Image (cartoon, rainbow, N blue to C red; front, side, top):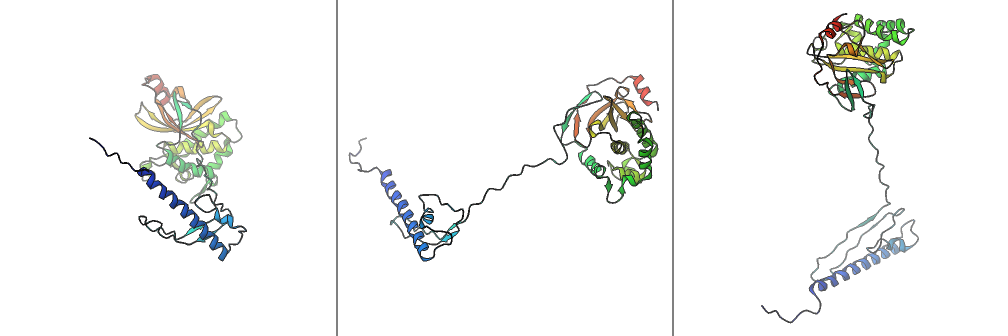
Length: 313
């Protein structure tokens, strides 16, 4: 199909582009004229040169570090096809510095701790475990040394007596003594009976008030005593575990002494070594510095001899 040989001298795109360019220039000059007029009628304090205000045009970036001005003007219709453009106000205020971004901080917990090996399983440092909330509650009183409703654990005669009796002994005797004396001090009571709830980790003060608790309450009180005797947090772990022989969940305190982990268990008056408890499967371990999640052992058989030895008090 043939097309007409007549073509516009100026392409359609260019024909629209030229008026748009002129509109931009006219708008810029109008703004400059309005700024100059406003400055002449009412000079702004702190501005010595009108050129400082002219910099606020469309052709340059305004410097407004120490400048605050408000301008009002309107532009008439430039072309019949364009809609009226009204610029009601320009507000120039000093530039503000961006707010400093504060990196969030982890409160009291680290996730870069070294792995912990307990009961033959490797514990990986984590920020959250199923026992985190209960442990942090008990730890708060343990670290502060007091509880609003019950005073300090040091106010209890039984607690101070244990510290006095074992304080002068060497570390190798302090650990078994604390285990024995706490096991004799407390009566075993399940949480549902003592606290009317399914699972509750009592603080040392709460345990001393009731003179009773379950396995983790024994472990927490022993932890507090040994901490007050100078044992470092990194050498202690409260271990939540699975007793595969009894098919029960349990908690004990593990204390590292001379490179070996000693087990302080409310079931036994004497301390145990890990090798004495092959049916203990670590699930989680905690201390004041962090928490660890343990990989369970792959079906280690429980020897009858080991079970009989562990049951001997």
